[in-house]
Image (tube, rainbow, N blue to C red; front, side):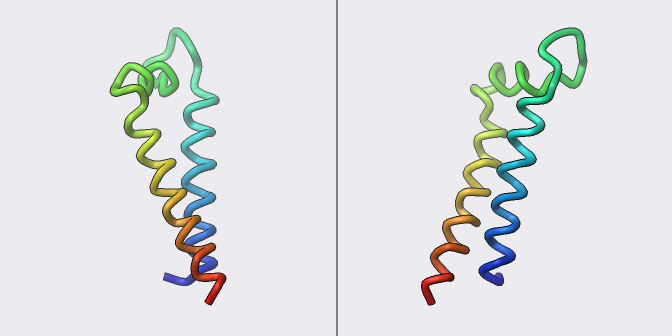
Length: 66
């Protein structure tokens, strides 16, 4: 994958996961991603997406050296 594409994909995944987690309503909604993430393995899905984003970010930065 292109180094700039890896950085871009990593940043998009991190930002999307944080936005979904942060802007979900805290009460009264079926799509309550914030509380659901904490209740289901303490946000395992959200943390997985963030870690994949960090992986792409590190791969892209590593490719910048070459």
